[in-house]
Length: 295
Image: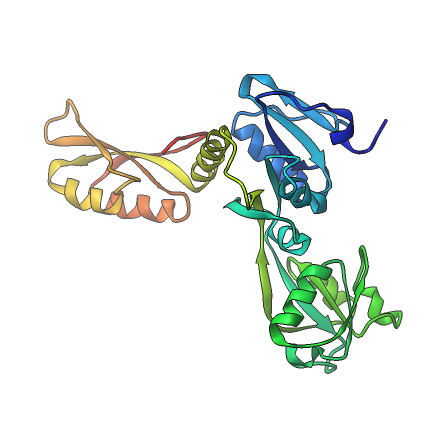
């Protein structure tokens, strides 16, 4: 059986063809987001493709590094990959939507005291899995250096005498520190998981449905529904605290002089907001998770 699902699965007419990471740090989070958006996902990690006819999509599980290339060539319509991998690929693909997970930073590192500024990269040997990103960074600064491609564990290349500098994506930088290296200069790139589409072609007809669903998940993760009762005299002040996405719902209560308010509020800071509402007279304040939405 071929390891390339695009060689084993013939195109399905009318289906939106979506590339999903098959493994690595992005895979589980991408699959979970798609499930929250109402799409089927594979139950066996060995599955290379999955057709979801009810939702009009076909998923292909590919190496995250290859996804932008498949989308950029027009073989697939949409992909989920890292911003770092998209930019490193040089593919004719572009970012359509940031997804908020898989965050990391692209950094350079060397032995302590070896380099103090990224302008000192000139003439150095730089080991990286992101050749495209490094070369573009060097070109932007007008620097010349030897770029050495390694597929993983670049932090050991300095100890082994293969390189003077390493360049890699990091979450905390602890792996580089454990290898006795010091991060150099500013962050080169802030990365996260992104939806990518072909850059030189219009979006497929069904892409907007997919995008609305993913947008709905992002909003649902970022907001909660807040309900509370408030005296009429404090409604304007309360609504000022909870304006909602468009406008809150205000309904009269059987209790004279009171109304019920329902509003979407940011998840971050919701507890502090409950405290402020209570201070101005709100009672029966409830928070409820939002599982899906369309705005």
